[in-house]
Image (tube, rainbow, N blue to C red; front, side, top):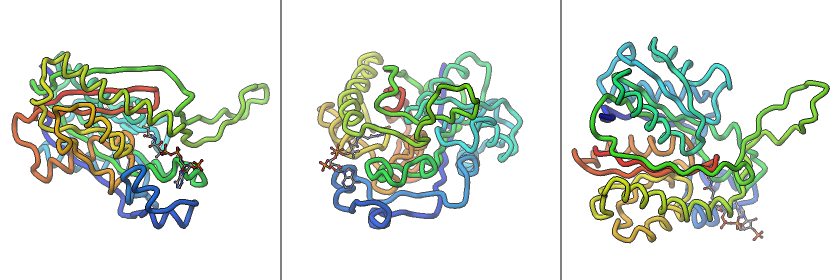
Length: 318
Ligand code: COA
């Protein structure tokens, strides 16, 4: 036994930053950003925090699921841009929605939402918990260097999540990890200890874009194929693919490699949100769910990659 998705929810802040708006901040233009990434606009949180967005997404997911906060047995959250390192975001969400269950975070950068599903599936299959809320939320605008045009154009803010109960619809997962900080990192503070020999680092997202691009275009189709092989699923059985929304060209490259999954099965909303890291997959899931895109029994592949480095795929039956 694993899980069944009871409902989904999301929240994005109202302020929208278009590519033209960005061109007022750094030396860039709409044509470059659209052609290289597929992104046209992103939402940014000007006056609310990550946990506030997470709590709104959580409330929407609970409402969509018909579950009351006090029925939750566990809250799992993921973020790299939380209000604090301590307390974790899950505890802030717990208080904001009026729940009283255990609550903790996982750190998995852009793959984190799929790690929440993996963790929730393990708990639900033991019978230890019966209702789990999983939320990914990010305020990437707060951890970007807005003078670095190669990173600040890629990301956006938002939050989204799901409520899970025991069921048979988590059909498998594949996890590839390659420990490395060189290509993608987000340093922490080094403190003021006078004897410290640690160098203070630039406290913003650092990324080697072209190397991450090469990593992602190779690893995403690989992890999906490994997942399909492991679960005995043919490419032709896959109804939808929800990839981490980092770059349209990465998703299109994956679609070209997975020849028997038609390109239109690879769902996208990157145009409107950019890369929202841990919120990216549940944001697209919620959008499609509310649009009535999924039919009962549809096989959905999720695939994410990110800092770690990591690449995770999972197979869910709707
Ligand atoms: N606007 C205009 N020009 C820009 C620019 C911007 N915002 N950012 C970079 N450029 C310039 C570069 O300076 C470079 O100029 P040069 O050739 O004169 O040196 C040129 O565009 C090409 O840069 P390059 O980095 O090779 O572009 P690219 O085609 O690799 O696209 C990314 C850059 C970042 C869009 C792409 O590498 C990417 O998406 N990588 C993956 C990032 C990712 O997914 N991160 C999330 C991980 S979870």
